[in-house]
Length: 393
Image 1 (tube, rainbow, N blue to C red):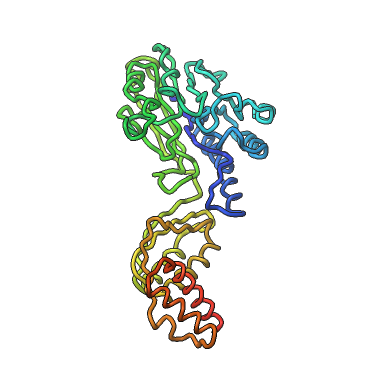
Image 2 (cartoon, rainbow, N blue to C red; image 1 turned 90 degrees about the vertical axis):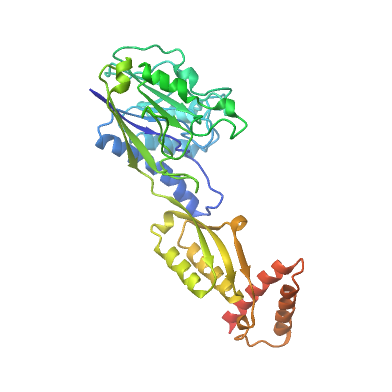
């Protein structure tokens, strides 16, 4: 027989993003809930027996009552057993969302919260165990996975799936961050796979779909909807298929296992650098923005380098202002932007100004030319002046 299940993680229901305003934030939050129904549909289509969610089901233990209720409604659409593991975002402490009356009164009966390390079983499915290592605190006091398998012994005829949450030392090596003692140690995990104590390790915390180690049985599913620009291959869940031949023995480590990425994400984070040195580059930027698909579900961060005239900077601002209404968000990555704005006489040639307006224009140009401490402010004001004066003309 084959054990077949869906591995997912890092739903972070209730997540907010500071760069999303108004209805875009509401749509983003709803997309994370909608992903649950898609996961359930894939589980049915692929003949999965159960679903494991490897931590960070919710963004925090303090999510709103509405988020909890909607999560329970979404979970009810999955007609298979679902195992939820508390992660570092919602650890199983005294404030745990999983212990609150709203969740406990509304969670579907097929949903099981992994609250300890005792093996869990599915009714009518002998020879299969789900073992968890729930996070009890936000910061781990050691290897957050070890207690899930340290006391296990090989059990012939039993296929064990271990569910955990944290960063493996092979993914983020010791020394890259000060909390290195909280890493999951890969070597003993692979030893537990080799001697038959574990058949698969389903991990959460890393939002990028990632295979870990050489055994082919330690994976991060990644987040089903992306959350940041730095993620690699997010937006997936994993279909895991494990041959039960010789389960629970060292021979099982050589048995066939297959992990298949299944895309479920609908949002995208896009980060791009654009060189701007004249009107043709602005034309290219405009075409690039217009060519991006699903703009209402796309979050863009742009960096600009180069040299432009003031009139070209005015056009750039107008392009970004117009396109922001089409996209979920467009951010300018100012820390990495190196765009020089050089006003020239052509910027002001078509402006028919007199009196106070002409004097104000001359004053702003002089401030920019001197390069004093208020040069940047004067340049911004000059750009706004040219834009408004041009419209008035």
